Image 1: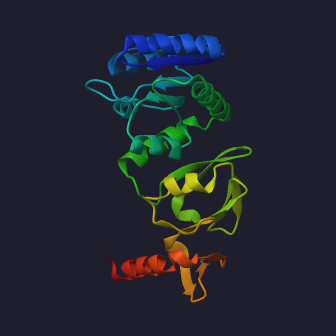
Image 2 (image 1 turned 180 degrees about the horizontal axis):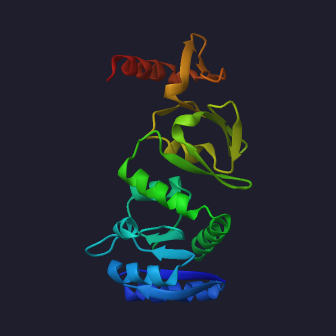
Length: 251
């Protein structure tokens, strides 16, 4: 069994989630609920949950404020929220779970299964701290993203990613040290997650880190710092050259 705590300022929302977990995720034992962050703080400290089901938008303090106050984050978090796109992007960026209200059964079950896997891998504390860092410092190239791979989650600083290539619905990620990893995320996910980190899409199947570009060849080829050659589609060549000129001018 996995111990769970629900934090939401709406009693009806707490009851609905409890009922859904009881019916569809019986392996989750809810050991407590809270309708504000003060109660939640004490409850989490006493109960040491495996999984925290946390609303983001609450009166006085948000779910993120609660996370900031806690001395340690050694549990997995599933956000239950109708919150804005940026926060959801940050949550996905760290491979953390979230479900959007009104809750869909399939999304809840998927998030719970992911949370159980992360708890078992003991990676949750690292992902949670990374989430707070990203929320405070979006675009910091030392931020690490959680990359789902076959054996679990690989945490990688964005500055170490040279380029990404879409391969049959997955993504091959080429790293600064010369190695590569395969992620189950498609390239579109990485395009969204890395948009604030000076990555550019020169071709529908490729995403490059602008800091790792060595040179551009007239025939439409980018040479990267790991000696990889990445194509630039004809319709994107002028936009790419304009972007490179802007960077040279420091605009």
